[in-house]
Image (cartoon, rainbow, N blue to C red; front, side):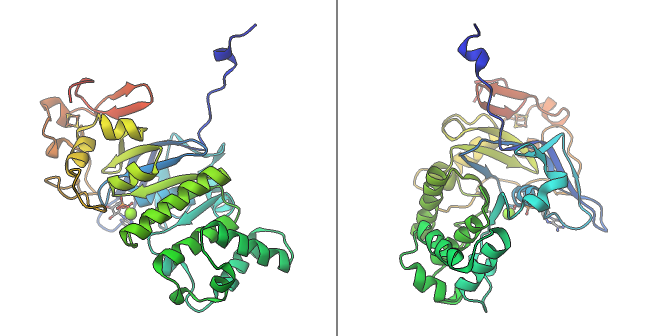
Length: 328
Ligand SMILES: Nc1ncnc2c1ncn2[C@@H]1O[C@H](COP(=O)(O)OP(=O)(O)O)[C@@H](O)[C@H]1O
Ligand code: SF4
Ligand SMILES: [Mg+2]
């Protein structure tokens, strides 16, 4: 008889990315928007992707949605969603399995169509339902996002709704497609603090109740702490650390992750930006030898400028650094 551990099949991540790169050709040379990102997102988790502006967070999400700029070159050792290769299937999966919530809900909604019309357009395109059933479904989805009077919201236009209500409508639209994986790109950045916190609470509730999975892009450590189960830290288009949020926040391994946390004293206001680290990320057209963080790293050693750092592993917590484990 086989033991329990032999019978256990390790979970296959829903989004499984290994060494993704996205290069955008420009007249001045290639922009390395994403250099090497690895990301494993399990079903039912909210996985935060955090880093300074320009680190490649949005482009990673766009690549998964099949929405990279024209001419961009995507390469990866693995780029799978639920076993399907995103290089061939991203456009088909977008709006069926993979939905998008952006920073600016006002821009995501059409200003001249009622919410009813916009919800119905999505339901008609994605679900085979008669008109009355679509209406009921629209009401149910708007209620599920916490909107108190769905019938009134349906009769409204985007400008008649607050930013928080607009973001809930955008989330309802994403659910209306039938998507079970949402890419939320800075979904609370345009909202004020308490409304942003409500939207995060809503996403957590939807994950728990509907079995959704969320890739949460943010530059805000508070969002990671409040809403995410695991997190991946990006630096200059590279994933440099990943693990359970508790480990990344309490025992960051990579000096960049430590610097991000140090730049946010406990008393920092919610929404504080990650701009307190001296220096800036390498230009996206540059070639990187050794560790990308070396010019800014307080612990850099001669080897750091020469050799790409090795992976350090402590159970599910992994990071790239020449420093030996436990040297923080
Ligand atoms: N269409 C584009 N053409 C050229 N460069 C781009 C384009 N989109 C993004 N970039 C560059 O790619 C890098 C990563 O961008 P992005 O993914 O938007 O970063 P983030 O979301 O982390 O702020 C940045 O240097 C950005 O300027
Ligand atoms: S590899 Fe070197 S430069 Fe890079 S983060 Fe580690 S110590 Fe700093
Ligand atoms: Mg972005």
